[in-house]
Image 1: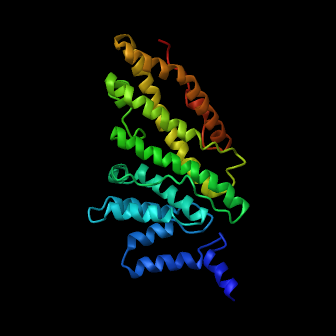
Image 2 (image 1 turned 60 degrees about the vertical axis):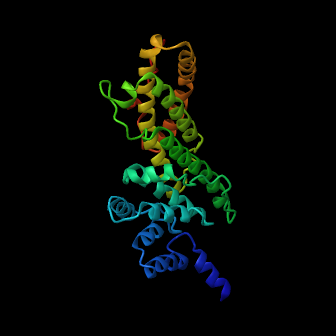
Length: 286
């Protein structure tokens, strides 16, 4: 009987466990509808966070009466669980809110050094758990770098305005550009470290994380490409020390292009991308 109860508490991964319901009830009793929705978005069910829960959290993030520190605190708390399913879904929920929730979420995470990185996470309960733990460590590293980049730049590269005439990266002055491009390159390189193959993308949860990374990559590379165009145009008016930084960035650009191509190949094989429509062409030389 005790063993059966323990199994129910742990959950089978095919539906909400008793522990999921206990967690949700705890927040209900405490009068925290916010905590309850975060718990519902990160159950042990082997499915991605449900859209209705994500949408509700986005609405909460835009309500003046809702505490952003409390919301972020609930999310971080869920990343401290032992189950890879709960932790992965909590990270996906955090990523979704960083991208589509109120800007105050990213601002709070950046200004308070929220610990989204999980370099030591390891769920050894099964072979799948062990495998997914590796991707959780990589995914959390990207989210931590995304927060660090926001902290240093005070904006999200995924959300900046693009365009030749008034795009942020296209019109950025030299000093700021030489700070922004290395930060953006680092963020891209951490994203590439996810390195999931088609074989690795074998469940809905990691697929949901991969899709968010793919969407980030499209936006990040578009900003990087515009920044590189700006860099080339400004090169001959730069100081010697600035030229060295610019040349390093330019010489590294083909490597970035190759990594983008590799990531998009996986995405294309999954049916979520079309490389031919991306127009991936190197910028003109200096």
